[in-house]
Length: 143
Image (cartoon, rainbow, N blue to C red):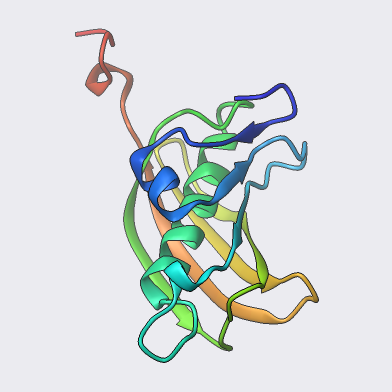
């Protein structure tokens, strides 16, 4: 991760889809950015809903992580996520998904998010429940 909080190419999914994760905003909200290409389109020529959901899932999960780790790298698992698709996104659009913690406790968090076009058009929204991975379940964690 760069000093500015930008994470690029860290996971296979991130490399495959081509999004960039920004955890350096300083406001506890992660942002996942995607420039839509023809590779992201469904058979109707607009952004595939699964890719929109993946971008939202990354923004929401990283936002959960920021609640306990300023680098946004503390692992959280998606327990559930509901996505609403509101407008199409087309090739050439630059999208940003932004998360916001709305509640929860030490190990489970409720997070909501929006996926917007660069002009502010709301493309999709999501709400999710995210669970922190216990330290003893991490590689090298306490037994």
